Image (cartoon, rainbow, N blue to C red; front, side, top):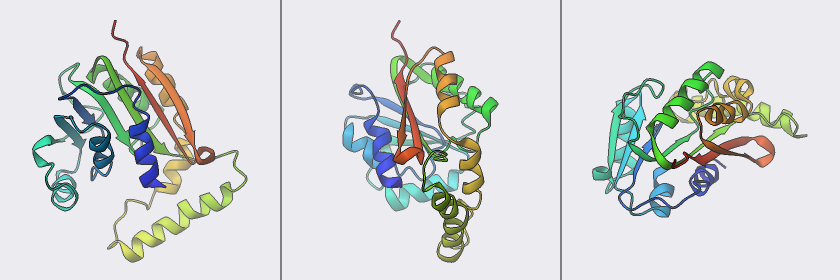
Length: 209
């Protein structure tokens, strides 16, 4: 499902990107969304990957993205505080980085998205959440709070990427508040739910005027 949701995030980008486009990926992690991005938009000239872990980025490029190195630049920074120039991006994306932010931080991130985008630029972000109205929600909650951390502990060398995922998704719920924040920044926004609300996304563009 994560693979499908990453692909859905890229499919939700509302307009074709110009040739030689510059894409900014917030909370980029290991860049597992980039193959989907470059498949849909092969003319992309540059991806700026913002993440607080430079080591994660270097490992990801070596392990997953050989042949794309010249098009990917890592910026070791907090996405809420990046000082990239205003209007630098034709597109801003993010996959599974929103859930750790509270409502005030989501408002700050929305301002960053609006600031980074060129007029007419597009954006698409997706995040796992909490399907509060789904009949199978108890099973989903058990999977997120118990199964994923156990699998990570046993098979992923003691990594802790999933240790808090149950709590984070329960607090986040969906992208509704973030969509409101983006709208307040003057962006045109569409919100989409996936698999009964197990994930949700926002996509849209900055008016050209």
